[in-house]
Image (cartoon, rainbow, N blue to C red; front, side):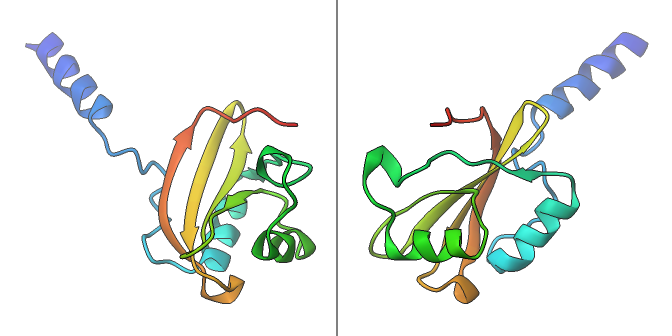
Length: 119
């Protein structure tokens, strides 16, 4: 019976949601989320020296870099979805945002991932 308890406990752990960083919330301000991520021991993870695939940084990416947000990986055009990476130990946290201006950027998703290669 005791073994069954541990099996069930293990299954619950495996089936836990991928949103391990419970302090983050969907639609939270990116600036607020960034403060929380850094306060919880995550560090900016720089993936590119130039824009994605060697292209120049887009305008929003340059603005983020100029504000010291070196964890920016890429932003799309249109609805301006951006990916940010943070590291803690050997794990990376990917935070996805949406918004055309930094002050209006909102968190749309986050998850722990294998860290992408650095340039």
